[in-house]
Length: 320
Ligand SMILES: [Fe+2]
Image (cartoon, rainbow, N blue to C red):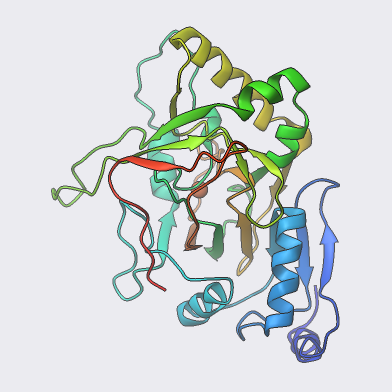
């Protein structure tokens, strides 16, 4: 871990055209970036390198970046216009772009799960999801900052959805290339904790395979957390294909697991990854607080040109 002085010196040197320091964490997904001080928005050359690395490695990890909220927002805006914090949940009162998540919310879901067992296996696969796909224009990138990090536990996992597509057999690729799926807000409760009506519900129709707007790759755009059904299939067919694809996108060899540290910052390409937030809250009890901002994205496009469309609710907004 570089000292503060070393890090500052390295960040100054990045004003030249020196390449950023990229250390892959696995052969297929995840890279740690060092030598940058994100409290200063990167110059355009560095931003270009960060985006190139993000599209190559899908998720980037930065350690020891003690940012103020204003610096966090300025860094986010260097990657593109930001969205509001969340379509349903409110952001911080002074910064409507920032969504804060605390451990208690995860515990409520994972420890006090009172759902009645059903014959079908759960579709959320222990929390695997893509952000905001219940809207037709999900965010392009998500940026998460560790504010209060426990000594252990609370890791986050990401999966490479380009690889998940590449790993399918040719006949299944041909099948999914032509399909679309309906994504809905899951377990939606229209009444907020304050008793007021929340925005939503939301639903959108997306191609099951999307073309990555930056790289042109085919991405298995499959979100176990929100897909209600695959359009045009019989229910049993839809269910079976959902189970198959959920198993594919969560294969361990396509994933990386990040152990957080205080002031760590993570950027993921929400166009090419699924992720699972803390999955271990049933096993430990320590505070954990993270803050997220999201870079606005476009309607997704399939291999046959199908463009995502909203079925219920509007599009994800842009604050700028
Ligand atoms: Fe998420």
